[in-house]
Amino acid sequence: MSTTDPDCLFCKIVAGEIPATVVASDERTVTFMDINPATRGHALVVPRTHARDLLEIDPEDLAAVARAGQRLAKVSKATLRADGINLINSCGAEAWQTVFHFHLHVIPRYADDPLQLPWVPSAGDQEQIQATGAELKEHYA
Ligand code: 5GP
Ligand code: ZN
Image (cartoon, rainbow, N blue to C red; front, side, top):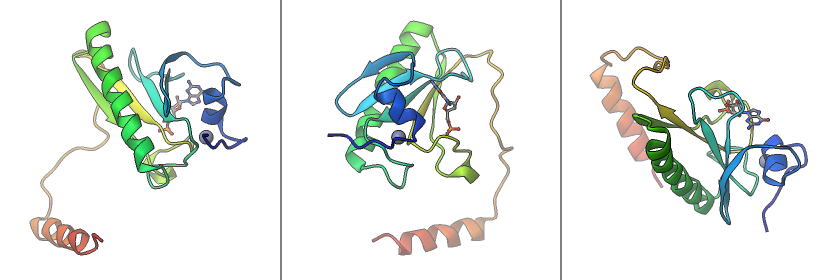
């Protein structure tokens, strides 16, 4: 039995209460087209059970979403002739999340599409990289 939030847009899509272009579904997940596609074929994979974000989602649901995302990536490559794929998840408003039901963006990429990285990669401070890595390592349970 999946849990739903009556105020959640994606729960309503999962329940079929709001229309969406659903391309696939299974016991744990639903995959539907994004209404504001970044590229042709941009779709979202969501768990049927409501979870706000990456920190809340049940790991089994997360695994099912990852599997469904990989499946869609393969279908998009073959069917839409995508040259590559970006998987994107935003966790928290500061990380650009706008809909608070976990979703994985599956974004087909084309050699001539206009999308760009949101940051300009540049060399980091090696000491800080190592210190931060050590701090994280220490706090693994
Ligand atoms: P986020 O900003 O949280 O990472 O992604 C939310 C995504 O949901 C956006 O890409 C947005 O276009 C999509 N979206 C928002 N409302 C709807 C809707 O009603 N239907 C569909 N199919 N997608 C939606
Ligand atoms: Zn929801």
